[in-house]
Image (tube, rainbow, N blue to C red; front, side):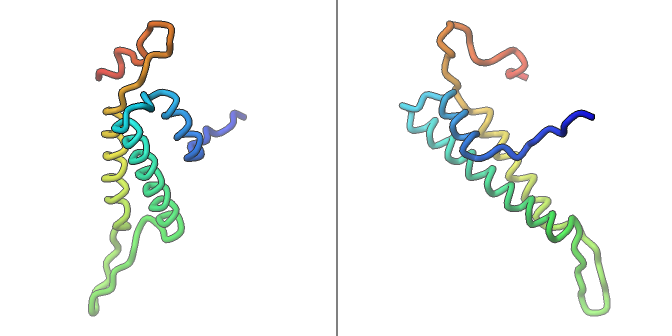
Length: 108
């Protein structure tokens, strides 16, 4: 049986990777890495909360009872969108062999 893909990569590992790929002399690029990491931390906190509380919540209003999706699900989508937008703005540096660090798929 194949091993499951681990998506819970440590924040430090992500930080090291990104800082190795961007121009660390640029305060703007370093700031983007910091914001990116903060968004990942927020996303993971929300994910833990939803796993603990469940994806739906019960709302009681007078005699009525409603079951709604957890409010953090919408917030997670917003944070995920922010993460993706930050990713698109990273300016990765050349690996040193003269070839760009991006591909045609990055332009889609």
